[in-house]
Length: 252
Image (cartoon, rainbow, N blue to C red; front, side, top):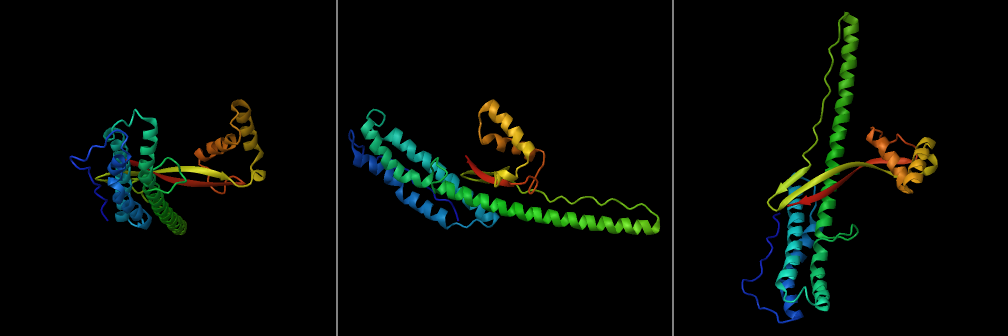
């Protein structure tokens, strides 16, 4: 799938008169078909391979570009936009009808950009899970081989050679396309599932931070975060689920 080549405004479009909402609507809604098509593609796209991962990156970054393009048209091509507050509010409504399908700041709103980020992140999580499984299998095979060599060396009175660990390389976290790139951000984090089970020592440390900075519940997650940085993983802390969160960012 190739990303949509979004339309450029006509070279000499009709110039709307002062506060001409119909003219403003025409300029902004010029992109309506592109926006709707992008949204449909975003919902339908299944990211399950490197090729579809590139497609998702291309669609997501193209959506960001179109989002910026529509905003540019609003602020530079609509007469009196910056001078007329009421007119601006109505033009903004026209713009939002399109851009809210492309990108908004809210994490809870489904847009082309948010859908693509979620699907790319899910795909990255699947690949990382598979890589860890392979790494674990390789580690067990290494330990088994080392054990066999040690036993053989013991029988023959020789020194067993040391088996070198097998390292499964991590995949490239950046996908580049003509329209921009997607970067997977891996971050270990946690969810407190039962505070009654959290070790007292961690609660004490959190209480000290809370009293000093008034961070409240954030203090405990901060303390647990310190343990995560030291390498603690599930099920290392009772009452706490430690997991790796993978998010995606788009860049030009």
